[in-house]
Length: 231
Image 1 (cartoon, rainbow, N blue to C red):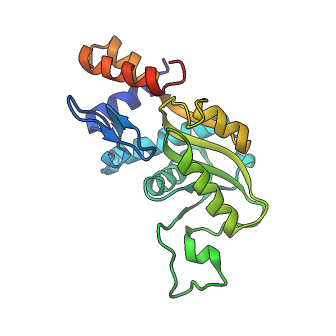
Image 2 (image 1 turned 180 degrees about the vertical axis):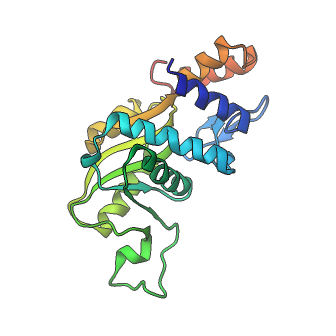
C-alpha cells in the first residue's frame, strides 16, 4: 500500500474519523445500518484538515491534468471544507483553481432572487456555462446523494462537463439494483470515480497492523458480505 494511504488511515483512526462501535450500528443516508462510519467532520483542526486537503490535492494531481478541470465543487455540508482545503493545497502544486459549494436551503434575499438560481444555491466562485467540474465528497456508498448534486448543478448552469468525482473512502457497496454502486454511477453518468482509499484497504491495513480487534473485523466482513461488491 502507498505510504500516503497508510498515513491517511492512521490519521483517520487517530482523529476518530473511522469509527467502529462495539454494539451499535450506524444508520447511513442509504438507510443501511453499518458497523462502521466515516466522519470527516472529525478533521476539525488546522493540521488535520490541511493534511486532508493535501491527500485530495495529491490524488487530483495524479489523475487529472490541470487543464482538464476549471472548478472544484464540494456538496454541502461535508464537501464544503474539502473543496476549500483542496483548493488551498493545490497551490503547493503550483495550481490555482476556483472552488464552490452549495447551500442546503435556498437563499431568497440580498443579491439572490428567483431569476438568479445560481446565487440562490451556490457559494464561492460562479459556475460558468460549459465549465469542467471536479466534484469532491467524503464517501461513496450507493451514490444517491451524488445524483442529487449533479441535478442541482445542472439547474444553475448549462452544458457542464463533469470530469470526475473524488471521494475519501469508497465503501465498495452495491446500489439498490444489486450492482456495484461505483460502477453503476460511472455507467449512468459517464463520470469516473476516484477514491483515496477503499474500505478493503482500510480493513486490511488495520488487520495487518493489529489495530482492529477480531470481533470488529468480523462485523465489517459480515456487512460487506451483505452489501459489498465481492470484497
